[in-house]
Length: 194
Image 1: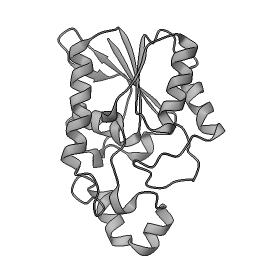
Image 2: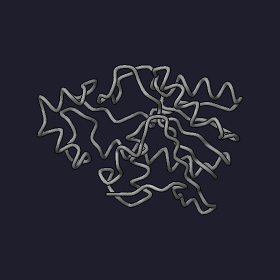
Image 3: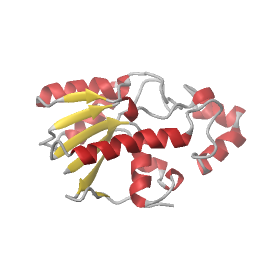
């Protein structure tokens, strides 16, 4: 089985802590996602985050390829609480110390009122374990967010998400994982951990 995790493309509003905010893709973001899958035939099923920046492309892609599509809340990005919708520039100016702690250890230094990291991780890995156990198809595409992809990579590499370089999870990036008959998954790409 091959599982692909596709991160949504560039979103209107620039770089910010978007979390559950439901902003749409830019034209560039849509093209980033299309380009990622251009030479990727054979996807048999798509599961997407219900947030617009994933769902709109997922609907287009599934219709074009005539494959089943479903939406799953567990593929949503983490909720950033008091930082929802705020830009990096704003936080660097007004809350530089808190932002620095978050970058060093996001699992333990989330913004006020954010979704607890343990709950976020548990919901992402519950979906991951379910799709591996179901093995309902040979090629499954999950359309999701950077934080979700970091959780999966961190789990498979046995490291915290702070050790998965943020720049490595690019907009419109496709990350493939091979799953063997025993249900063990391994990344089909190179990623250095800090």
